[in-house]
Image 1 (tube, rainbow, N blue to C red):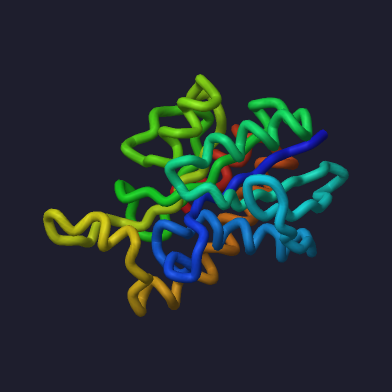
Image 2: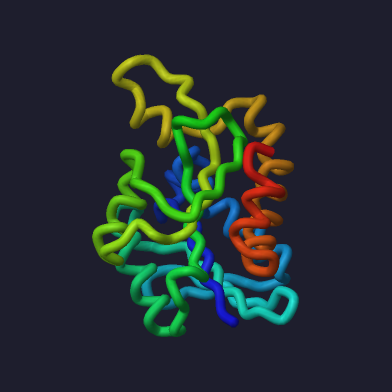
Length: 187
């Protein structure tokens, strides 16, 4: 069995530690747990590893957030990975900081990365894992907030949250989406 886990983010050092790049951070943590290294490849950086007998591909697309769908489709087709075995990790303004929410399908909820994936794949029926970044910004400052860096309190809590999210992703691979949602959602 093969699985594709996609951490959404933007390439470039100016985005590295922003809230919008939390998908990349979770992907990095998954690769650490799998003892896998990222290599430059088509449409981004890929780490390959095994988890409990299952092959796991961890992708950080280099297409920028709003064109992520091309990378997802390419790797699904190249590695012959079915839709039910992909997991997309993204930030979510509607959830309090660090809140974990996995869903089997759903709308893009205004997220440009998910919107593009939905358009390219022609479906919303794939699992996504949302990382709450909260909405602590003044009116009209959403872009600055999302592309801003973590505050001190968030920075202190971030390592534990990244670990929890990485473990939820590996649970998805081994235990399936329903068991993972029961065990991790809201935690």
